[in-house]
Amino acid sequence: QVQLVESGGGLVQAGGSLRLSCAANGLTFSSYIMGWYRQAPGKQRELVATITTGGITNYADSVKGRFTISRDNAKNTVALQMNSLSPEDTAVYYCNARSVFGTYNYWGQGTQVTVPS
Image (cartoon, rainbow, N blue to C red):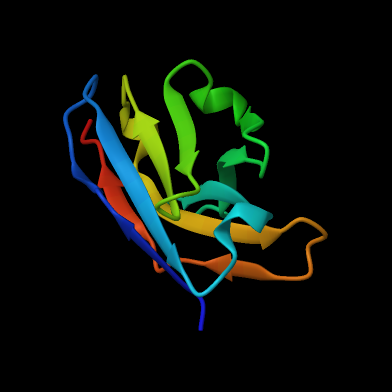
């Protein structure tokens, strides 16, 4: 059974930093594209960042230069370092694992990030 467990969310003041982590179990981690998505109240879930099996990263324009995604294939973890946070970053953040050809797609339960205005 595949499990993605996020941690590291919380409340942080504007301009602050948080580091999210996702631990994956039950899959061949190194074979999956890993990503972070977020969903703010009343909005659709949106891409934040992805990292391929080869370490190529992709970011939403809104987080470029502020967020960094990384993966550790030895520990089956993916992290999202978030700097210069703003109230617009407030959302539930979800970890995602997607197989290279899209056959399998898994989600974590989400972790709340709140940046008060």
